[in-house]
Image 1 (cartoon, rainbow, N blue to C red):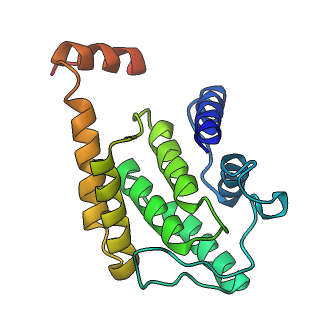
Image 2: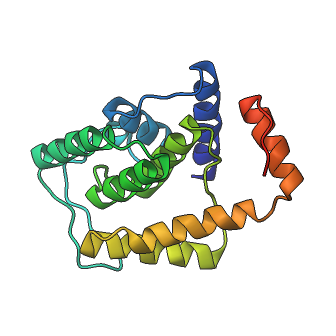
Length: 190
């Protein structure tokens, strides 16, 4: 699982660089990411395709849709709606939460939605957010389950922004100036 996550992240990072900093966020990307992330974890016939059997999510009463046509329709709606969002943080949160809630695949839905979230950020030269701490995982789960049950993004957004702030606090003002100049080629006063 971790090997797939690492390899997919590196592959997508290289692809973004090759494509001049942008990857198109669409259904094709979603299915490709799922296929890479679940290599050797699910049967080949279930990699990168919409599930044909029901799934359950531990820790919630929410039940994802079961009908293949309904799932496909909702994926299309999610992809259409995300195109209207211009703020990369808003787009990343929207895609992550809605893809994870839909559970379009038999397994690997949260990994796939986290990778989509990361790609949205990388498309805008924003470092994606990762964590391996148990506390962060609990906040992640709490925020996501809250979204599943209520449709309210606030708890997941709090987790997301807290992780981003924690990341930024690791840098000094000089580090930030240097990173900004490297990424944009411009000097910035802070």
